[in-house]
Image (cartoon, one colour):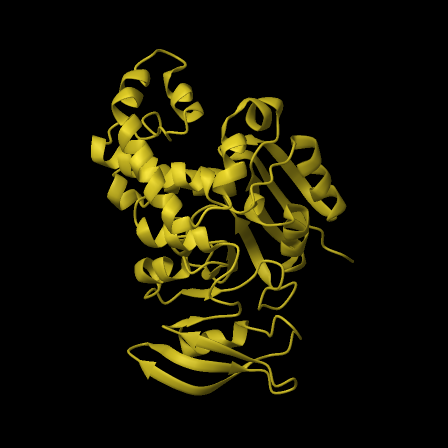
Length: 332
């Protein structure tokens, strides 16, 4: 992290400002240091340029394996498609010029959206609960308007009412309490600021008929590293059949998803076999590995927005199941 980013951080336990101790500066950033709360004595380390506000191992360990293994799989520069850019722009609808604004990215994963937020000219504070932050730093950490940290969505190390914009894409359903996670994010949004989130859809088809949630009763308890190896073997075994099934008109690709072989041939129409298989490894593991996978109905998700006191609420079916956009009310 750059030294001036210290001004954005607060103790997640007390809310007090933090100061630097014992910093070692290499290049343009602080490689190691202690972020110190002078009032309470709380300390938080900076390790490999990344401020750390949580233990290194936690319920999100599977995402650390996932994103450090596939650190660039979902990057448009590698897939040669614009799937990540299009998703970010269509979900946020923020435009391309946000100079002078402060954006919070809650749950960055490998950083597939981080660069597009930074391209707007805004300052982007990006965090993840898992050590996927290592993958994001590898790809985006050198950019001057990006600061990456490892933190908990329920105890964020920032000042409340401080962000012009907040986005949390592909994350909330993987927390132990999605409603609390969503409403916690709202506290950090400035009055008049915009928040964009999404969550998996809870329905009879997705939660009862789909074999994913049946298989997850076993796989979510497995060691993530062993499960990843199993998913790779499973995809390799099923791949010849899956490539035949995908050619079935209308339903072929959906059948592959029901077989728990992630099929991105519709979204990546010009991708080669190697790329499609790499996405299948990633997303098959992503389906089966998270400790938490808690979807919501459209009605429920809209209610959370209303209960949070948001305005201009737009909750609708979208890419990830349900998407929500809203603004924080300006109090007189």
